[in-house]
Length: 216
Image: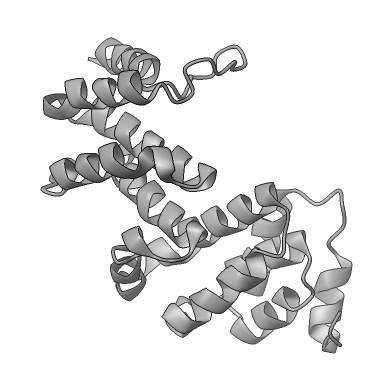
């Protein structure tokens, strides 16, 4: 681990295996944006300090080159930690700044698995957050139909989830999304915990649409 400044060492000392995400958020509120401190915590190479580091980043300091370096570092973690770190980066930084949103829109064909996942997860996120004014949906569905079975599992899940959100929120495309699930059979035999929605598209869409109907 790199040598830490006194400030960074004091913050690092507060993080342990009992630290929760809520604790990190509270720390970030107190520390506020501090890109230098963020860089020091990131250089520890550890999962929880890196989660805090993401919260402290100055989004204006992020660009494609910086994100590529973060991406490379994230790939040194176990798979589940990789996904959590990249999703955390997306939710807390990449979607908070228009230039970064523009970058996300270019990542559908990125050589980075994690960046391709962000592209698709962001498209799903836009829909569950209430956006309906999309003209890219037919193209997205064509890409999903053509590529989903050959994609990496992390990207495959995000593509499938995007199709699920399209099917839930955009009724005119619902039948096509259901057909994707029936054709690919992805997650068809998935076992999920009680009260969790399965990822198999015909079931996911049916359950989620029923929830919407109950809210009317």
